[in-house]
Length: 207
Image (cartoon, rainbow, N blue to C red; front, side):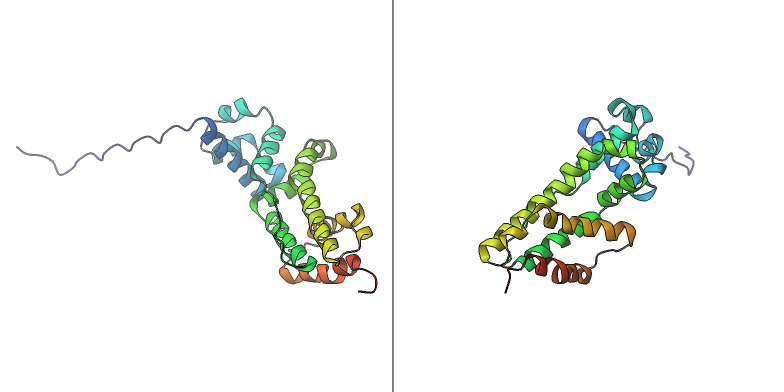
C-alpha cells in the first residue's frame, strides 16, 4: 500500500472554557494590568476583554461600566495591610510598616490605584473614595496607631503625640512625595523620614 509522506497534524484541543470565579479573576487581573500600563484614560472594556481572552459581552454581563469594573479590580487586587510585627522599638516598627506600604504602592495594584487617583476627574474619583479609604487609608492608620500604642507602653512615645495629625503624617508624606516629586521611596528615604521627622515628633520631652 502506497502512502504519501504527508500526515495531517493532530488537531489542537480547544482551550477549556473558563466560567464563574476563574473567568472573573482573569477579567479583574486584566483590568489591573491595563490600569498599570495604559492608565485610567487608556483602559477600555474591549482591551480588558482581550487581555482576559474572553468576549466583551462576558465583561459587560458582570460589570455594566468601566467604573464598576475598576472598583472591583482594586478591591480584589490591593495588598492587605493586616499587621506589623513588634520589632522592639518604634523606629524599627515604623520602618517595617513603611517598607510594606512602599511595596504596596509600587505593586501592580498600587500603580493601578495611582492611575485612578491621578487621571479621574472629581466626579469619577468620588466613586473610588470608599475603595481607597477601606483598602489603603484606614488599614494604614490603624497599624500606625498600633505602633504608636506600643511605643507609648515602652516609654518611647508621648501619649499626646499619638493624635490624628501625626497619624496622617506618614501616609500624607509618602503620597505627596510620590505624586509631586516622583520619589520612589527607597529604604534610605524611608529611614530619613522616620529619623528626621517621626522619631523626633513622637519622642518624650527630655528623652
